[in-house]
Image (cartoon, rainbow, N blue to C red; front, side):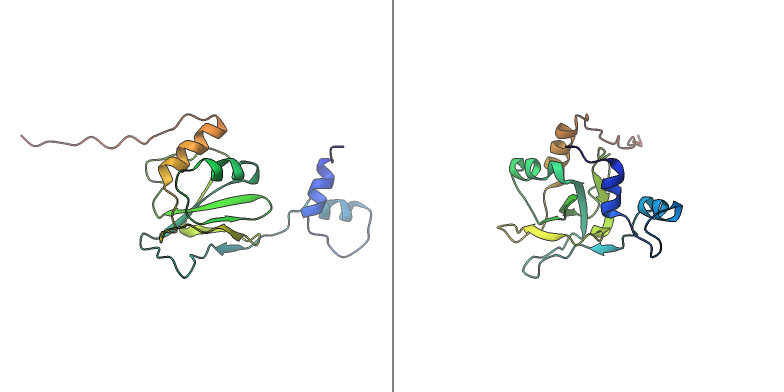
Length: 155
């Protein structure tokens, strides 16, 4: 049986102290719980010399992406999102398709993500271009490459 939207929201909503019914109880069920932020940590045995950003996707895409990537860096997950560490600046000249989320500095909503994949090598990074192309494919979005500015030539 499908759960109603109110049931789904209630499982994540902040419950204010007070009466269990009435208008104040209904509004507290629809108020989202404030979520803090956290920075995804790089495991101590890996070197992140290029800086770190993160790319997140809803959990429904997680296993498909992880199984199809030829090279995988650190992958973190919580109940709702999966996050891949990528080198800082991996959003340059790219438009990451929705519902993907690009997180500069690997700062993400704090839903207690945990490391679910540790790379075999010494790099924490997932190559951003294969990740980008795979996310585009899974979301049915055409890749959108930025156009570099024209190069002026002095004759």
